[in-house]
Amino acid sequence: MPKQVVYEAKIEYLQILDENGKLDEELAQDTLTDEQVVFLYEHMVTCRHYDEIAFKLQRSGRMGTYPQNKGQEAAAAGSGFAARKGQDFLVPCYRENAALFLHGLPMQNILLHWMGDERGNLIPEGVRQTPIAIPIGTQMLHAAGIAWAYKIRKEDKAVITYFGDGATSEGDFHEAMNFATVMNAPCVFFCQNNQWAISVPREIQMASETVAQKALAYGAQCIQVDGNDLFAVYKATREALERARGGGGVTLIEAMTYRLGDHTTADDARRYRDEKEVEAWKARDPLIRTRKYLEARGLWDDDKQSKLEAKAKAVVSEVVKAAEGIEAPTFEDIFDHTFAELPDELVRQRDTGRTSSIGQHPEQAGLRV
Image (cartoon, rainbow, N blue to C red; front, side):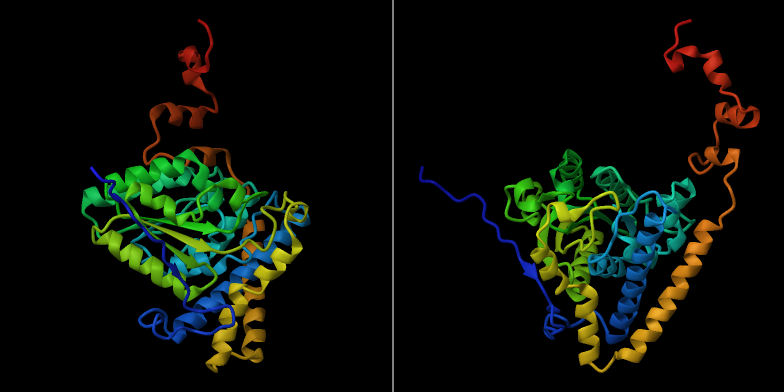
């Protein structure tokens, strides 16, 4: 028999708002209104200020460490805005502040987390998101499971999970993708490709030309977008979520962006990144791009910018006060927020301050009787 082509594919790249603030009017139809863009720009500016203050808190010894979100605000804000608050579920990594805050997470929670206070991981009732995930890639498995549960319950909801390019080299990514596609779970995998897995550049970390194409092996749909373009991120994510809710399967979105700061405050990116590369990406800063668009439309000016920056400063100042002024934890706190109903064994531990069960069953602690 002659040879046959059994599979062909192409990866689309979507950009609607370029780095000079010029909009493709046709592609932008039915995406974001001017009012929504103003709202999201104000939100991103506030999140950028929050990011800068968090950095200073760490440098002044008031917080253990912190991974800056700087430069990636549009990817988080655009995708988060596309998800339905209180219905769709967000399963984040740790650079999605702009999305988490949009969906109701108190801003002080992120600071508390990085200050080492477990209460920062307490998600308020009705807020549909998991705590931020530090181990690389593990959260995608949770997202696949939550999405499968939605399908089983026949709920009109979807899940979006966030991760970096480095996480796609983890086994958890592949297992989650395979499970979600086989089960046709309503799940969107959102990769913030910020070009670096700590100090390892994308081209060394993987042989594939794109992250998006990895979805093809699992039968998922995929697209690559300009991750610093609010319009493109919003459009691709909204369509993916709508498709997922309608039974159309899994989508992998690769958002091309860049972390303008270090990997975390424990890192020094100057040791491995070319400053010319950093400067080139600064010109693509999502905040600058969005402001150019608004100014061209007569929707923004220096006076509005000054008022916004003053407002952001005041908001973040109150958030810091809330985080640093929280009451000291109590002994009982370590027993809360894990079980809906505390098992009798843990009730005894809480009430007596003793691990009585280990005394009764020493084999639990690996002790010989």
